[in-house]
Amino acid sequence: MTKATHPDDIDLSPLAAIHARIARAAALAARQPDAVTLIAISKTRDADAIQPLIDQGQRVFGENRVQEAQGKWPALVAAQPDIRLHLVGQLQSNKAEDAVRLFDAIHSLDRPSLLTALARAMDKVGRRVPLFVQVNIGNEAQKGGCAIDDVPALLDQARTADLPIAGLMCVPPAQIEPAPFFALLGKIAADHGLAGLSMGMSDDFDTAVMLGATHVRVGSALFGARAQ
Ligand SMILES: *Cc1c(COP(=O)(O)O)cnc(C)c1O
Image 1: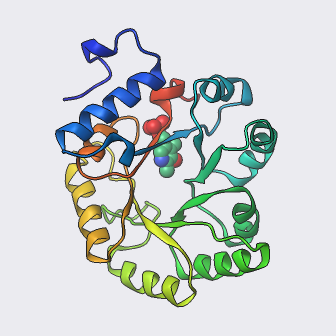
Image 2: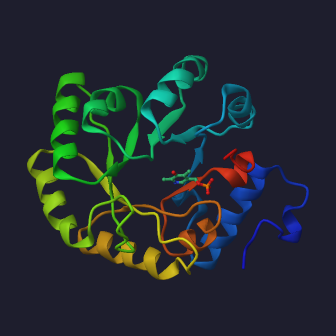
Image 3: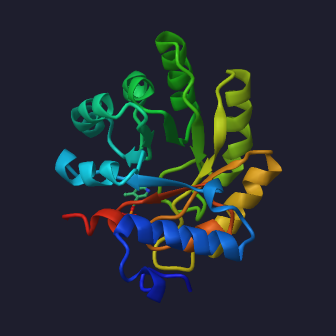
């Protein structure tokens, strides 16, 4: 398949190689490469590691902890105001207001109580932040995300609260072929008329793009392996 070892990619930077892989996967699925947003997942990376990517033109970044993001991003954004930040990690309701102030999209809406907290925070801050409903697509006991059966009620609640739902997000089960889970997320999104599909990480974003991902979340393939 389309992997980083593609002969055309040998001389490319990690960022350019990932764009090339996205373009190849999109072409295979007759999609436009610019229909896919690359979110550079910068959790655990400090400003010195992030700055070179900004210098290469990357503008969309993702973090999984509100507090960590509050520590490093305000200075980087002040210097480069067109940066957009996405929250991809579990969110506690008591951090909803901080998240709404800092992030431009939140990919981890997974329960009614968080929706209520986000609605209140958006009203207070005066800012509408697009939300992705995170779906527990493999029905895993230990995994975050809303159960598939609970998605319709959560979307109804969002509509009632007039919250902007951008789409669905998933992290498929580890160690097994992700394609069926990406396809299922796409079907659920289509059933509800949602355009956004946040799916695909370093190991599987090519497959996700072929199956309709609009947002891929790539960390280690860009920055190198994370420290444990
Ligand atoms: C860490 C993380 C990623 C990126 O993972 P990589 O395997 O490093 O690409 C993507 N999505 C979420 C939700 C994450 O927590």
